[in-house]
Length: 319
Image (tube, rainbow, N blue to C red; front, top):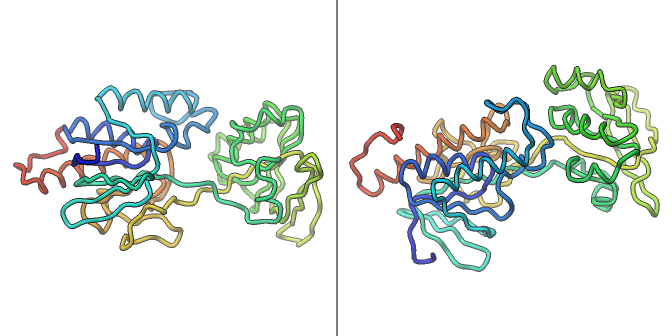
């Protein structure tokens, strides 16, 4: 494999990366997808998806599996390893792997997504895995018949709170504002769920524990400034994601939030390197938008590779 030259290497196997793979294979590009985890990315951690076109309701795990199976049906080559660096070149780029070896490619699509944003409060790091979690579908089972706190006010926080309400006796939502940012349908479900109580204008300032793990949080009312302790058995944090920019080469422009700035073809300022999905600066972060980014970047990469290789320059958008 090390002696091969690829037309396109996709780093990341989430919705964006797998969508890019489908379009790249349809464009007859010699394509490799590298994913260090399981295909589907963050979608695997979602209990139910209700807003992906064509599926009124589907589990995140099943949707991820369908994405992966679709891409594999085109004979996609997948390498399960970690990428250490992307080294841009004038004619070709090198993907440096964990073992030190390098893979050569004309084009690169970065689909590395993001990581859960942290509260950065005392107790958060020390109690991770001992009552602090960033994934309700992963850890909710351990809080059956207990009391938990969800931090956040967007769709993810609302969805995870509703999931936890199926397991826990009581679910609090701490939100720093006086209204949720979640979609109206989720807000209505929160309101209708008797187990859920929203704590408005509230932030967490500390997570406390005893020998058994998390046993309370210190909350601050951002209006009055008052502090109080709330007994809970677990804390689930959903306050957004930080783009995973570790592999973004030097010279690529980043926005203030760390996301990659691209043009409408998902191209970065380095020729042949594209960024998609949650890594890319955009108005909204949704599964369907990541998949759309993958399509766009793959078509743009196909045209770039054809031009680079001196092909006839046929319209890649016709595949």
